[in-house]
Image 1 (tube, one colour):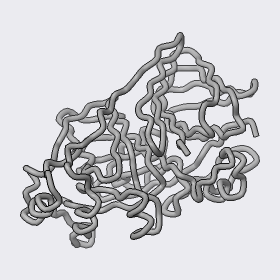
Image 2 (tube, rainbow, N blue to C red; image 1 turned 90 degrees about the vertical axis):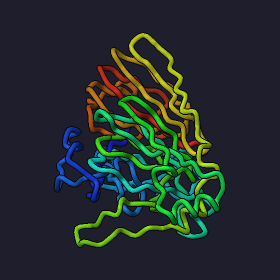
Image 3 (cartoon, rainbow, N blue to C red; image 1 turned 30 degrees about the vertical axis):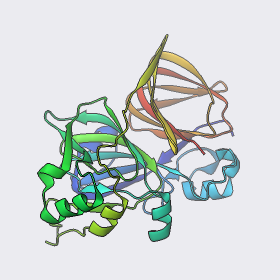
Length: 316
């Protein structure tokens, strides 16, 4: 199979969501859409193949039945999940477990993730890390509700990147749209939710003991998030992170660039612009809001136009 797999995917309404994702051409069911699970084989929101011989097949089924498209990967489940998030309000302050804790307590992968900031309103912030130096101090500060001293807030702007390993205290703040690459997991432990209530008037569940179990100590032990960019005629290619679970890249095309496969398969999300994807002389138009997989059977491709994209691949 020598073509990209384009995807139709699932919108998720959230208490903190908004309507910014309509800019990507998605038909929003409300003004509280928080997430578009753009490339997903997770049972809570599965993508469907939109083109070619596998059109209409879900990604989880394709991965199970045609492992040759994924380099004959031995991973039990499709390992990655790509989302676009619209934080119209603060997300809960939260943490995710690692693989061992996730498997033992939740029956699924842990969750290391990363964020590319697509847009951020003036003054927008994230929570990224915490100040506790011991698990005892962490538990006491949570019990006391001493959030101002415990949580580390960081101002953000468009174009920044943050790697969020499992165990990291984090939250996306109001007025931010991000592209998130993560392990395929939906396990989230809420530490604090600003005492807000859902549409039924109930406080949302917190997971204090699980959070204390899995949070990294000390909480200021964070990645350096250093981005490395190579400039070519017609393209700037940046490495955002190379990690245990995934590599993530930013591709900015202003002209054209020829790519050669250097991973078992590649996930691509178009954030801005339009252009063409050419594989073995066959071209297809691509534009903002498109998401596709370049399977392991595609060895070379060319991208032309004026585009900004985030690409990723599993490292196992």
